[in-house]
Amino acid sequence: MSKKLGRKLRLGMVGGGPGAFIGEVHRIAARFDGKYELVAAALSSNAEKSKTFAAELGIPRAYGSFAEMAEVESKREDGIDVVAIVTPNDTHYAIAKAFLDAGIHVMCDKPMTTTLDDAIKLAEEVERSGLIFALTHTYSGYPIVRQMRSIVESGVLGKVRMINVEYVQGWLATPLESSGSNKQAEWRTDPKRSGPAGCLGDIGTHAYHLAYFVGGLEPASISADLTTFVEGRRLDDNVQAMIRYEGGAKASLWSSQIAIGNENNLNLRIYGEAGSLEWNQENPNYARYTPLNQPTQILSRGGGALNAAAARLPAGHPEGYFEAFAQLYADLAERITARLEERDPAPASLLLPTCQDGVNGLKFIEAALRSSANQSSWTSLK
Image (cartoon, rainbow, N blue to C red; front, side, top):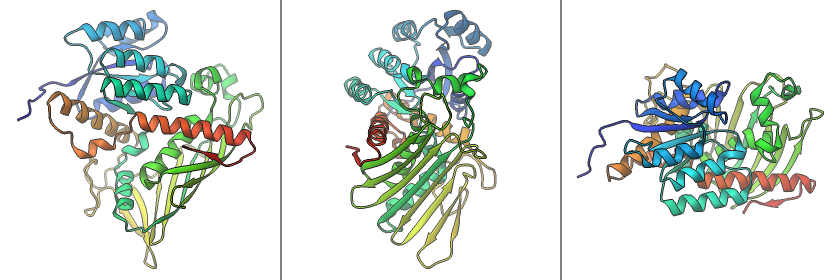
C-alpha cells in the first residue's frame, strides 16, 4: 500500500524576474491545481534584483545565483522538490545540470538547449540521475489536443497521409529589438542568448512538436527555407519547411513572426485515408473531425463523447492557455508525487513532454538550419 505525501510539492524558480512574461505564466500555472508552493527562487542574474523581486512576490527563500540555490536547497530537509527554469535559452543547460546534480527534478522551457550536443548530454544527465525532466511544450496540454492524439491512435482516420501545421505571429514585423523597450524581443533575436535559431527555435519547435505529439509519426527528413525579412535582424523570422515521415506521410510547416495581422495563430490539420482533424489554438476548445464522405463534426472539449480527463471546467466554460500550461504542471506533480508515494503514476501524466522531446526539437532546429544553408536540400532528422 502506497504512502500519502500529505503536502504540496515545493517549487523553486530560476529566472522570471521583473518584465519576464513566461515567469509569471509559470507561477500562475503552478498555482492552478493547488499542488505546489513556490518557496525558493533566483529570479535574476542580479542578486539584489532577485532578492527584491522575490520579497515582492512573497517567496520566502531568495538566492543571488542558481548555483547557490541548487547547493543550498539540496541540503535542506525542506528543500525544493522541483525547479522551473524560465531563463533565456543559452542558460538552460548549465542550470538544468546544476539542479540534476543536486538531486532535484526539473521543469524547463523550450528549446531545451541551444545545441544538439548539449541536448544529448543533458538527456544523458537525466538518464544518469533517474530524475524527472519536463519540457514546456504547452500546447500538448490542451484537452482537445490530447483527444485528437487519442483519435489518431484509435485508427479511425486510417493511415495518416498529410499533416499541415502553422504557427504564425506578427509581433516582430518591425525591428522591435532595437527599440530598447522590449526585453522579450531583445533576447529572442540575439544569437548569443537565443542560440542559432530565431523564429525556428521560438515557435517553430512548438509547431514541430505538436505535429509529432498528435500525429504520432517518426520524422525522417526535412527540406527547409529560413528567411530574415527584417533588415539588420541577426536571426530568422520566417520558416517554411517540408517534412517526410517514416512510412510515406508528408508534412508542411510554416512558422513566422512577421505575419502582420496574426497574434498567436497556431493551426494543425491531419489528413488520413478515412478522415481528417483540424484545430486552432485561438479557439482551443473545439476541433473539426470529418470522416470520409460524411458531414463534418465539431468536437467540443465538454462533449460527452470525449475523454475530458484533463478538463477542469464544465462544458461551455472556456479553458485556454493558462489551463493548458497548468496541465503540464499537474502531470509533473502526479509523476513526482507517485514516485514519493512509491506507486505507479496515472497513465495520462505520461503525456508530459520530456527531455527526449527536447532532443528531438534540437534535431529539428539543426537539420532545418543545415537544409536552409544548403538551399533547401533534404536533410536527415535522425
